[in-house]
Image (tube, rainbow, N blue to C red; front, side, top):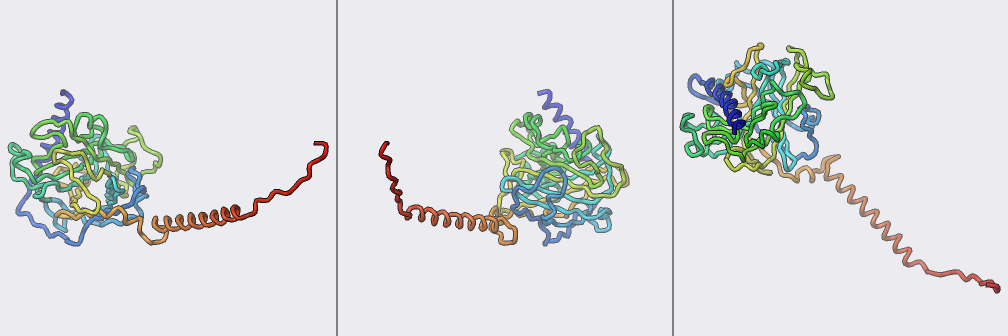
Length: 361
């Protein structure tokens, strides 16, 4: 009980800080490109979740300009370049890769002086991208009843305590306590109805629910790292600040979860969902603030999950379908040869040569 209260107090202070800084100026306007979308194709068995992007080289992605989330003005675009978003699924899990250029910045223990990313998905039928679900209730009146239909699912990764290449997110200790926290690397599983009513899974207005879990796992990397075998915590900050390079953030989650509290988005093969991607960066070494993040779009981006059999029936050279056909042909040839050999053995006369027996036997 004491542990649960401690987690609630710590996470509550973080969430209050996020909410208090979310202030907009003027009316909201958005000109979204209707052509953009993220495609999650069926590609089983090719991704190792380690934060590195080598195994994603043959996966198509979509390149997005990063604009301030609360003021999506082209003149205020993230100066270091665009973000590439890639996705795929293996029939059980969905995988995401976020790739963005940026000078290396890392201050151990201070999340706001390190880059940070988040994914957001709608859950409720009325959940809007703007205002993070769009429920108009205040924190004192936000409940699963007053904000029903405005639920959004959020994964947020702050890397201030995360070792490059190591997995963070769902772990036995936090999942045992029944919440979406991550005390080791702050890759947390959240839900929200608006920016002021945002909670870690399992924690909220009604208190702790022991059935909640953190279903996400993820890792990060930067191209300036020279170590290829694996870092340990004592090697922080892992590289020198200010070096130009590229950040990679890699995540996975099961398509379906065991959520019963309307706190996780559920994905379906051959179905569609929507996604939003946020990026925080300590510009000029200054700590970022919660609402000062960039976004890949000012509206939801369609997220499509291709059918599971699409890759297996492909006819391109080297595809799985061609491999299966060649293997089947080889089996057929071997079967025919064996049948001919067996027929010959059966048809061959079964004669035994006569050998005279000796008289002294």
